[in-house]
Length: 248
Image 1 (tube, rainbow, N blue to C red):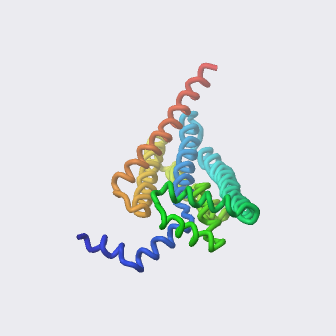
Image 2: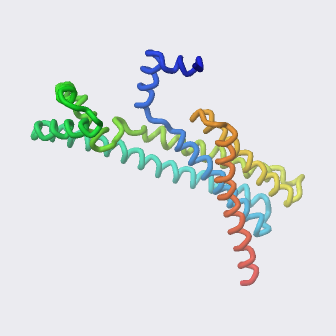
């Protein structure tokens, strides 16, 4: 048996892992912000290069876009996380009210939930008794088993911050070559921007693989392909619009 696998299933490790599952994680917020920031900024870069505008315009528009879109996305994620927490709070209050007003009906719900999981008498009645003797456990059971909700929603501020800083941090990458545009030809500036954008996607995928304990290569490749496809679409749209503008 793998030694690391055996250690993961020791009593104390199991306790830590189960406790950690109750906490909210913000990897998804960060990955979404990073990819969106990089794609959005690369779209600005593509538009500037496609329109044959000065490099300073890319820096100006790209920076303004980063701050405005990053803040907008963070606010949206803040509202989303806040709504999720409020949904859980309201559901908890509703279940507590149901327990107070129709306890027998709520007990029957617990019974049917665990009967559906394969519990049989007399164990089934004992399970129902144990759960319904503890009010907090009873409410938590209804939240998770009946409503399919987590016991605690994400922290709205942390969700917003994860999105914003990932958006700004990774979204800055496509703009970096334009800082040196005075010494590099426009074609090379855009090439370097595209390469750095690809590297940024690859790095985000690596970090995602580390956190999720997945294959680093395939996680990085997946993110690179998805982000690259979005970036290519942004470039294609900018090129198409340039051609359309030339005919107007």
